[in-house]
Length: 307
Image (cartoon, rainbow, N blue to C red; front, side):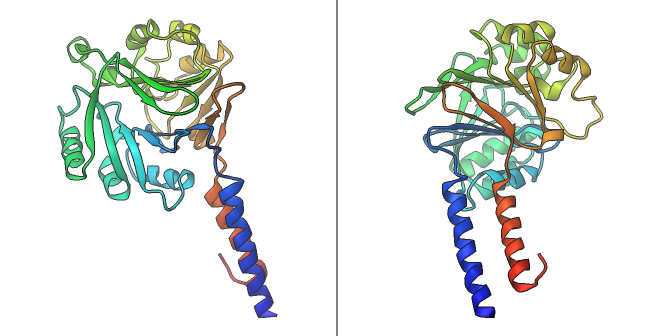
């Protein structure tokens, strides 16, 4: 009887493994953007149809690795591109550990990055771990090869940003990702003054907006939202004393009927696009958690053990 239970367990485990690989793996035609639940901070993973991956910011601590483990296969330890919008710890704090956990091929920063100690250390680490470092400025563009055109246009900062804006938040790297018919705007911690600048550089409405500065009262202005009219808006916030997200930001997004997600309440959010037709934006289905709980149930059933 015990041998029979063991055999059933092995067969079921194999079935779940195949289910994970075949049924739960994203289609190679999909662009998947994961807004990771890292508490009060930003971390966004883009999985391109080519198989390449870009991480925009890292959050402040190891929470990002918990979320990456839910998204990436356990054997995948390469991130092709890391783009750091600016040097605040809630955006770059986990970078020191990321080097040890993943092979990072390319680091993108703005041209003012490196002025403070944490930024200097990141640049130094990039050299130590063999990652190439590239500075980006408004007007630059990154193209990822695929059957559907995929392009990340840098809308901000301009070369004089550190003179015009004394707050580093307002010199955040801002990128507009275009995948066929769908667009994703990544805004870092910019405020409404910079929103006015990038507004003139955006043609048409936005499919998915990463809400600026965690939904601060100084960002997501009514004028900006009325112009870009995001179909979906994602706020990355956690427990905080800043009042994020601010009711005014929520009201402005609601006024254009944008569907709003907040990682504080909805955990990690994934937006999946095939470049045409409808886009799917929803809380992440935790594949690893589902697999672990399923195996646990099998063990309990077959061997009378606790998980």
